[in-house]
Length: 186
Image (cartoon, rainbow, N blue to C red):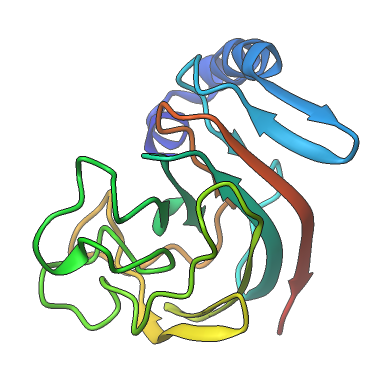
């Protein structure tokens, strides 16, 4: 996250403590499921930074839900109800989840190759492989992004950071995650 990275070192601990307090108020783990109530304005982020990795996780959203995953601290693998979310328009309306949403218009990885989402309210499974600056994304066993380049969103024109946190994005909607597995790759 850019805010944390640009703060002077002496202010980072206070920033993290305040965000952690808010996170505990709005993110809960019940029966092995991580749930965000859709309030608080805080995403859930790994403490550890990851370079090359393989990630499995299950997620679900409500109707009109919108969220995502940050890889190496960069936005984002899209999670959303693309049929109903007000932000869906043009080529992305009805396109499904898994695209690299913040990639430039016309980029092959911005919109998924196919819609592979299960109906809203049901569990979906991502399998993401991040190597160098490329992400390959499967949703429910279907390839939706093949070796899509993830740009450096916060420092445009600079290389993607070599490592960074994985983040479950808060975007103002309730959402759920479970069965999260990360394997570091060489």
